[in-house]
Image (tube, rainbow, N blue to C red):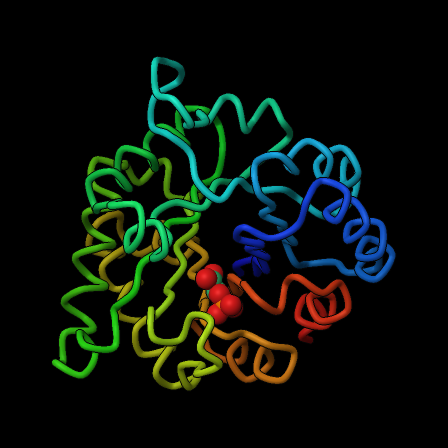
Length: 250
Ligand code: PGA
């Protein structure tokens, strides 16, 4: 069985001090949780402080982005080995806000997934359709293209280290969650593609998270679906109580 992943994406919220205060409040709330991988993705300046406070606990740390090079003259960028050194074990890649505001493409997401795996980190590859694309009946075409392109050249042997997050853009930060049926339908479709790419056994081991207005009130219904293996949570991960309630969805 797949161990669920519940990841909090803080986006551009929380100073290092605010991040530390969150972790101190959050750790005792989830200390007893077993069988769930809990992940916090703070902004870069908070990575080290969150990682050192969470070290030795059941909470892991992710970066929200990385560059695909190991080092170089790329002003303003941060590399996979750097976030790993700061204590991250995961890296969110290709989030729709990166695609929308920072010109990320399927190709850059793919390069980043490869760089993240090479650094020994777990990529959380994000994908999902916009409202216009859904209304035009292109959900499967878009999500399928983003998945295939993002994972291009990744061998089945690496599949266990890959996490996928389906995040319909129209559901992010809007309060409009996909229904569990809408999410499950896309997740099952994505797993079908993973089976084509990597074979049934490998595809069955990949965690596919749902993201988009996940809250304590809707997590259980989402998690009751066969192919929904966790959540990538934005707004509701900023409050320790709310995020702990999501982590304890069972
Ligand atoms: P949201 O964000 O939970 O605030 O909708 C999800 C995300 O962007 O990962």
